[in-house]
Length: 374
Ligand SMILES: [Zn+2]
Image (cartoon, rainbow, N blue to C red; front, side):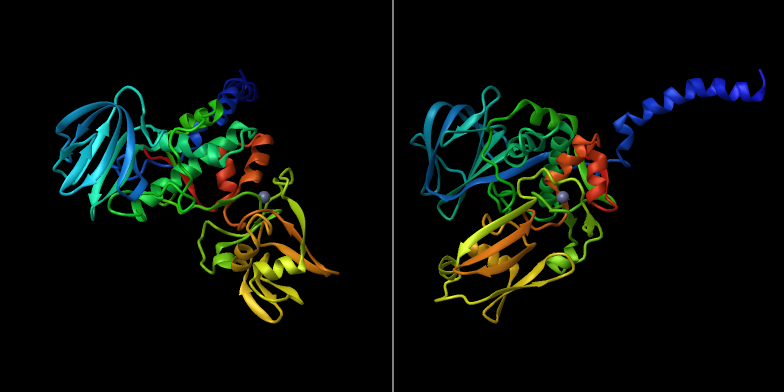
C-alpha cells in the first residue's frame, strides 16, 4: 500500500470516528467538577413569620439531630406555642423539627413539595423550609421560566441557568441562616411540585449537575426574555463590568412577540402613574445600546424607575423611543427585559437552528465553562 492509499485507508476509519466524537456532547463539558463535598441540597424558605400552618402527609418527625420524635398521618396543624412547636395539639419542646416522608410528597397549605419540610421556631413565630435535591428544585422552577413549545436544547439551557442561579445563591448569597433561597421573584418563582411537563423534566435529567462556571466557581448569571437584537453589557446597564456579561449582536430572537412593540398611552394616564399633575414632554437619554434615563419635563429619572412606575409589562424593555401625538404618548420598543446575559427567545432560536445548550450558553456568556458539579 503506497502512502496516499494508506492515508485514505486511515481516513475511512478515522473520519467516522471523529464525526461521532463531535456529536458526543459529553466532550463539550469543561474540566472537573467543583469543590468536592458540595451537598446537592437546597433550602427554600416557603413561609416566614407565621403562627401556624396546615401540613398533610404520612411523615416521621425528626429533631435537629435526626432523632425520631414521633410520626403523624393525615392533615394536622403545626403551631408556634410557648417554648416549643405543637403538632396537632401535641407540644414538642424543641426549636426546630423536620418532617420527612419516603412515600408521597408532603403538602403545605395544600401545595405539594418534594423533599423534607423543616420547621424553625424564631421569636415565637415559625419559619417553614423545604429542603430538597437541587435537581427537584430545578424541575419545579423550569416551568415558570421556559415556554412549553421551546425545543429541548433551549429547555436544557434554561435548566443549567436555573441550577447555576441556585448554586450561586447557596454558596455566595444565602437569604438567611435558615434557608438559601426565597420562593418568589426575588430569587426564582417556586411553588413546589407544579405541573412538570415531560420535556422539561427530560431537560433537567439530561443536564444533571451541570453548572456554568468562571474558573472553578459558579458564575453569577442573568437572563431576560428578548434582547431585540442587541445584548448589552452589565457595564452599560448596571455600571458594573462583568467579563462574561458583554455586548453582542443576537440574530436569533425575532420570533418573540415582543421583538418589536408599540404602546399608546394617554398623557393623563402617564401623569397619574408618575404621580404628577401633567406631563408635557418625555425624552430619553441613551447609553451605548439602551435608554439610560428618562427626562420628564426636565426632570431626570433612571429608566428602571420609569418602567416600574408606568409598568414593566407596559414599557417592556429599556430600549425604546417616545413621541407625543395629540393626547397620547407613543412608545416604540425592542425586546423585553434588561437585555443583559442570555436572551431566552434567542436561545430558542439557536436551538431551532440545531445548536446545543453548550453552544448556546457560550454564545451569550463570554469565557464561561460548563462543568458537572456532582
Ligand atoms: Zn436576542
